Amino acid sequence: MSTAGAEARAAPARPVPVLGRVVDVREGEAGALLWAFAYFLTLLLGYYLLRPIREEMDRPAQQVLFTVVTREEKYKAKTFIDTFVYRGGDTAAAWLHAGLAGAGLALPALSLSAVPFALASLGLALWLARRERALEARA
Image (cartoon, rainbow, N blue to C red):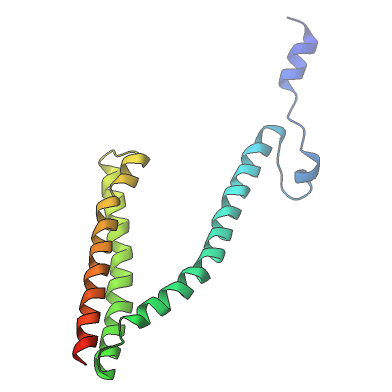
């Protein structure tokens, strides 16, 4: 083995010119740092772009539920929906996901496990629509 080869292996990695000005990044770390940044940026953009869209669709859809009820029933139901249904649903979904992932299900199986819940939601929506029409017809 030549001494030049040993010296090349022993030499510390050079800093990356552009990133090296901002953070202490070596050559082998630059790719991981860029991927981490891209992942974080994607999460932030997804959250801040989709949240207003979801809220703009959620609120009018929620208001449709209250077309044939009294004012008192409306405000009692809104409180229940905002506290129990939204927060409880998010918590239950997180627990279910953690439980299924802990049971060893891979991502495709986790995705398929959501299908029965989506179908149940569709069934509930159809039932509520029929009930709302019946209440409207009586009023």
